[in-house]
Length: 525
Image 1 (cartoon, rainbow, N blue to C red):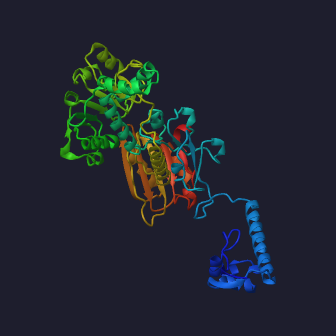
Image 2 (image 1 turned 45 degrees about the vertical axis):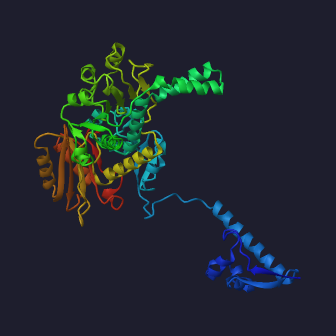
Image 3 (image 1 turned 90 degrees about the horizontal axis):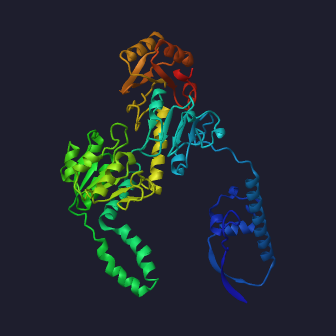
């Protein structure tokens, strides 16, 4: 009996059994010695072809089966050996095996952000006992930072998000510790929630859904025909208005505010914007003459059918930015949207407006208010503004990049208490870079550079910036100090206004740039 078959027959995978095609292209030395000899191997390397063979068993068939069994046994042995072998500690691709920067995390941080830190060069953990050294940086989301959470070894703190009211920024500034955030990383998520709230405020959707579930369904006893008629009959109770052609006032035109402006224009709304501290970068994101920018809030209050706030909470500045006086200048039916901070709108003033009938709009927010709890016009969500997978990933990735840039180069961007400071490393330099935090006092920089010159250090480039009471200086030298640790101590003693000093060499490449070394904190001595 003769049948036509294809030989050699392919097998499932090279981990267990090699296919004919894999064996035909594999170099002989890549296979076990037992498989590099004999007719079976040569046959496997030959082109696949269709031939007529007898189906009756033969000695050749027996040899082939034995060879396959041997292949399977060897593959299993190799797999078992790999499983039992000790796993090597993870290390970066470049083989770095020195000390790493230590990062303490609070809250659950997105793996997208944590994976930004190169293994080996950074050691990241939420458990401080798992860090080889005290933390040099802190990364968090909503954790309420206590002063005891911040040892003197911490160089910087970064929050995965925009607000930093859970961090004692004033005290960190006094300690010379920059606090970073991630502006714009969650901007799209917040913008979408604002758009959703515009519609919810306008159409009685939430109230209508409550009426169906808790009134109609119960009163009609689950009778489908009766419920259908009631749903049609009761629609008049929830009339609304369209947002097209209406005016929205946007207070704060940063990353989130700019996106809200664009979305509102796309929905056919008129836009009035206010931001007294608008940066050039933010201004470039705005649509120019398609919106109206005002310099006085009173003008925005008078024109707006909807008002949305996108400013940080600053005590004494934005606290109760919308209060009783502001509400008296608004349209009676104005809808308020607050996805920034609860304290920006005076809840007691809003309630008085509702109770007196002066205000008839709604207040949409993802913050509770002690004066409006349970009020039918105050529609509150859980704190959902940045609660999307994409926003959390974006914030964590941006936070990690900001922290790495600061620790490795001294660069400061996206800080809420330190000035933006960027000094590109100089090519062919010695790698000696000194970062200095000091109180912003007249003559400080002159004293610092004079002292450094007296120690034989030649400055190749520098940048000096300040913000409020804090000054920050980054200096590159053409040569390296003989004793960096002693130099730091002498400089701090000679200049009493210095808060901290940090030498950065060729990070990860020389002793001066080894993570954790040459960091001097005056207040901790």
